[in-house]
Amino acid sequence: MSVGVIGLLKPAEKHERDIPLVSNEKVKKKVNDISSAIFEGKKKEEMKKDHPTALFNAALFYYNGGMGAVDYTQAAYYWEKSAKGGNSNAQFNMGVLHLMGKGVPQDDKKAFSYWREAAAQGDNLAQFNVALCFSKGFGTSSDASLVAYWLRRSAEKGHCLAQCNLGVCYADGVGVTKDEERAKYWLQKAADQGDHLALQNLKAMKGKHKRVHSGVFRV
Image (cartoon, rainbow, N blue to C red; front, side, top):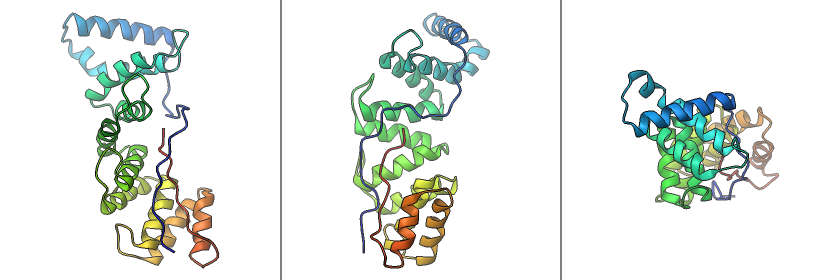
């Protein structure tokens, strides 16, 4: 039975990026130093080099309520600057903020644009989200071949939901040539990581269950 590859669901609001936050005092110092450098127009090479990472940590500080209350606007402010400096984690998180409309206007196209920037740098969560966008035309036009392309990029880096969905692509011939062996390969890779949907899909290929898919944005 042929089914759609990926559904489009709103994400949980929990922040799940596994990135260490430096101590509050260090963050405050970085914020002050960087703010001074930005607004006074200083061009010190050591400061410029440190911008993306320090700005990213400053954003985490505000996102996690480092000043006593969560401040999405300030988080967006610093993540946007970090993203422009090429930080892929900041690009990913700006996509999440635009998806949810936190600290910035809700904007599907901008969410997609930021994720694609991060995906191009190899962020496997962003690659999975880009695949979701191409699946349902979220912030861009639908394109089954690009769904499979970005799922493969993410799956090759070990993302189990990408592996599961790529397996469904091969099982149903969505964006790729139908290939039962490759479908089983990717579904098994996901199943080996404990993905219950992949296990169900493997059974579905034997005609015992309906195929299912994973469609939650990674945030």
